[in-house]
Length: 241
Ligand code: GLP
Image 1 (cartoon, protein in one colour):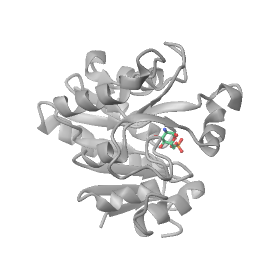
Image 2 (cartoon, protein in one colour):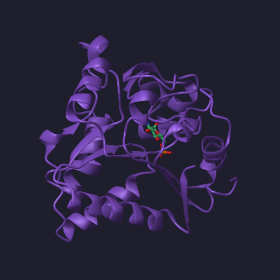
Image 3 (tube, rainbow, N blue to C red):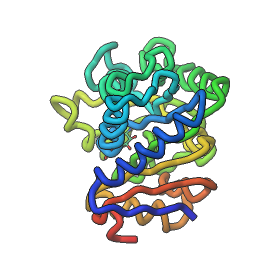
């Protein structure tokens, strides 16, 4: 059973998560953080940036991103490589050489998933994986139907997810059709999962993921198979539990 923490605001929950990460980094010589994109983890990164500004040293923290779009030109501001650099690497003072994002370049895309999976395993895995959850229940970009054993691989985005993410692009037509995403099997190997969800719009997905049947039609329900999960919510996101 996951540990469920409900806060009045996203910022209050994010602060607790960031304090926990900062403490774990202090206690470890080589901490590995799994980073998610999307809006949910942003207050955690902001709170970690405050720790960095206050003197916390994150320069030996390694990071692995969950996913990447396929085919955006290098340096595209909405590529997750750029988002992670902007929201995580720079404000936290991570060493860019220790931060990895799946390679979404069209060249060599057939092997991008395997290469990333191997790099993650060789590195020794992720200590704490931050996760958001999509309206479809997706984790990373593992849409409904994804196997709980899936490795990092190329996937097709659903129309709903492309619509949801269109807000970051000029139009929905500019949202890529494909992505490279850690699989649910990959995510489940992280040693601690921290799922963040804020706002009324996440309430159904949170209830289904945390308390509904464990089924591939709700990728978020994979968290119920993991021995160490913390779900961090605001009251709106917790309202259907
Ligand atoms: C994207 C990301 C997911 C993220 C989801 C939810 O699709 N690939 O990793 O969890 O969006 O985003 P938000 O946190 O903005 O609701």
